Length: 342
Ligand SMILES: [Zn+2]
Ligand SMILES: [Zn+2]
Image (cartoon, rainbow, N blue to C red):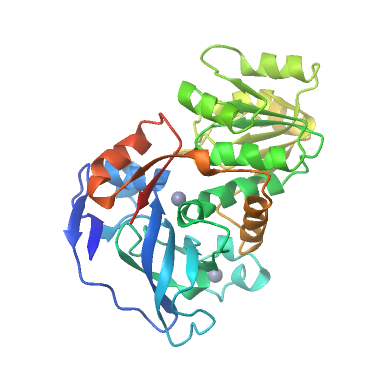
């Protein structure tokens, strides 16, 4: 099978021919139909500090995908050949405190598909049955491949009660736009998107975000203050992972508001806790991944409601052969989600 492998500790990747993998008793062998490029894949491709500190070579990467089941392991009989599935990226151990108390997504011994195990930029992939989500017939493979990042948007918004509220989302990459759409879907009065990339801001607008701001052009906190008559936003969701942004984002939050942190910072962050959290009595939430399977059920419900169409967020599709172009497109931040169609 064709497989995109990270095999050298330098920028790039190699498309190779590999045998179709063998599955274990708890796995499914799936034929990949669509696989989306995630920020993590870009890190792996670039071979930056994030990648080199956690990845063992060679690695078949890619983890956001939708596929057809072609073979079922002995202990995975609740799936059958021909089932359409999407992949939950986090492989929970099933036994630790978190796994036994409904918190599998923050399992102590969690592994990540396409980071710790071989992933999905290939014609076939081994999907642990515990990570397989049966795709509703009303959801395409391409959209199915983006349910994983969409689910992060769902999870982030689910920490808050956005109905009738003003919500600021820092970051208008795919997850940011998904979070904005979910906030709007959930009844937010006004959703404000913030990003430095023009294309992303216009995509956010196109997808229904009420107002967008570019911090290179305006003071976002001042603008949010105007919109909120000096009170500040009820909810701020921070997705950029940019260390310099967290204090600015905090300035947009009203006293007693909800601050949801999702973006991953490299290293520790200087955050004025006294003014941004303590005096404000801000509620601060960390969010990682998706709640299994609550975020998925909600994501599916939103996608099937007919009230949101996430299709335009996928701005580019590629064949696996054009992987360089695909990953460089995702890297350029000039658009939304990049998806391989297989
Ligand atoms: Zn991802
Ligand atoms: Zn566990």
